[in-house]
Image (cartoon, rainbow, N blue to C red):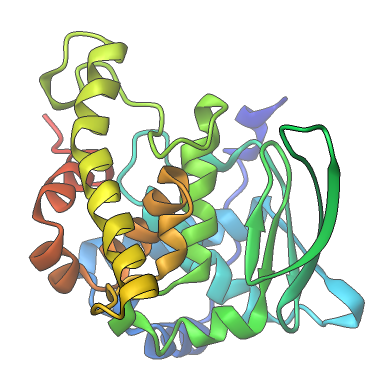
Length: 263
């Protein structure tokens, strides 16, 4: 409600020193061409204007924390039509100092309820907040070589969730990849993503069970096609060269979505 009113308010001015420190820590941001870097800074300021950060268990949200998370969260929507509206289903971002222990409750096919604790670096809730470990966010500054980035992972889930399902296929614009309908666009997307996921899952199984060489991407991507999409997005944004060498069809697909050509 009143989203038009938010558009009348400018984002906060990001001090030059703070912005440069963020770029130095997260080098994949510093590698953006000048026009894209300027756009990133502009959208980061608007993100900081509209989102609310909460420190869990006494963790203090500093300018460094908020700016690091905001700049990386903005990267996937930098060129998307609608920009930050892709993230308008939530306001809160909860940050823990270390990894998060999430309590899980699942019911198996026999209707037996199982409860357990899961240690996670982050989590995105549909129509709800994003939770992140600050330690994992900091680690993302030095793990681009392995394609790891917890912020991009969780915000990729947010993009995927826009149509109500975490299935690896975000809502696609009309005419995406020349498809005549939304259903055709989805089919074209999955025709590229699913074989890549199946191959990746097979590699992780072979590595786990038979000692074969493990894939360089986070093997958590083998859990589901939705997790594979998020893991692939991490690598796409932080190590494009290596991602393109190993996942050329996915690179082309993601380019069509994340960097659409303007007419």
